[in-house]
Image (cartoon, rainbow, N blue to C red):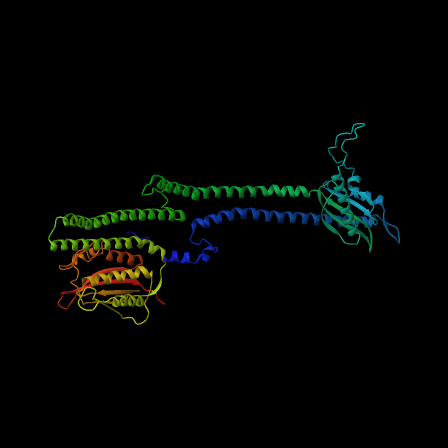
Amino acid sequence: MATVTASPEAESQSETPKARRRFVWPRGSRLGRLIIVLNVLALAIVVVGALVLNELRSGLISARIDSLSTQGELIANVIDQTATVGEPEPALDPYVASQLLQVLFIPRNQRARLFDAHGKALADSFVVADRVDWKVLPPARKPGDKDAPPHLTPAAQARAEKARQALADEIAQAMKGRPVAGTRIAEDGERVVSVSIPIQHVRAVLGVLTLEAGDVDEIISAERKALLPFIVVAMVAIVLSSVLLHRLIAVPVLRLARAADHVRLQGARAISLPDLSERRDELGDLSRSLEDMTHSLSERMDAIERFAADVAHEIKNPLTSIRSAIETLDLVTDPAARARLLAILQNDVNRLDRLVTDISNASRLDAELSREHPKAIDLSKLLAEVASLYEAQLRPGPAPGSVRVRFGAEIPRPILVLARETPIGQVFRNLIDNARSFSQDDGEVRVFVIRPRGKSTVAVIVDDDGPGIPAENLETIFERFYTSRPKGRAFGGNSGLGLSIARQIVEAHGGQIHAENRKDEAGAVIGARFVVELPEVRE
């Protein structure tokens, strides 16, 4: 029967679920790195673009504040030198200040206002320059139409009042003798960059000059438009990465799922997988693993079918013998002949019982190997316990069951192997039972442990003093239901499964088992020897 065993790495991962939950950078995962890089790249484009434009916005506003401050200080100095009248209590001449604002160049996107020491407006560039603002007026109210909307809604009136209050606070701060700069909402609801500069004559604050630039919203709008290309590039990168991931991951996985569904629905033994074996990422590994898995399952199903056929054949032989004996029993009247027939019946029943028991053990072997996790066990201690069980069942005298089992280890310290205790113990019981069945009554079976030179394994040797094994059968004896008994041995005393089960268990543990003949100095066979090599666990 085929056996599927878990690797130590997989078992160690199953025993440590916490380690699985830790985030680990996909160092060996090309597909994982591709997913992370593409998504991070799309995000980085947006972040870098936003950071660059935020810096640009801050720089533009700062530059506009510096420009207005320089311009305001120049105008304030000219007003102080030209429009200041009165001694010893100087004040600003409104007419002269208004003329100065009219003469000085004020760009159309800027507004200059002059306030006296009490916060009263003296001049406004929008007025002195005779500017006209083009605005869409609301529909004219018809005579007697009381439900017509007012010129300003309550929200607009509240916004305008809030803007006037913000301007008044700014002027009040500038009256303390230090410039005030920043952004605020104007009466028309637009955001403006405002600079209020006190007009000082010696130490006296004669008024405040306020300069406003109303193109802040235009700057912000232009910045948003500049951000659009970055957003478009990021979206294109995300869409392309999504399409790429869809083609690289979703489509192949869907094809694998459909292939698996085909096996489930059609009852096919083999699976026809899409050709992904050339890929060097996780999906390629998955495809190759599924191919290996289905191949292993197919072989296992073939092995089960062969095993079932062999079982039917082996069971049919004793059943045929039993049926013949029963049919003959009624025709035999001689007591001695009837006794021989009854002995044959008993022998066939015992053989059938032994076959059923060994077949049941072989059928449970896969489940036992997958259910029990390997662990470090002391091989010397295990073999000593197995030998002591045989010694406890020893029968005195030269009779069946009187073969002694002696254990000796050439290695004094504990010998550790990574194995499953129950199945590995069954290996040595099968080998000892086989050796005892070929030994003479009142004979001896020797079990000892050695460490082969130049290897990281330990070897368990089982020796007997039987007739040995024909050279051509040194490998055949490990086949299922193979039995070969020397003359004089009872037929049907063995099922032929013991050595086959032993090899299957040993190979599942990563070891090897073979048989050889013991010879004397003259080259004559003096017994058989079975050697089991298992990987040793170093402390």
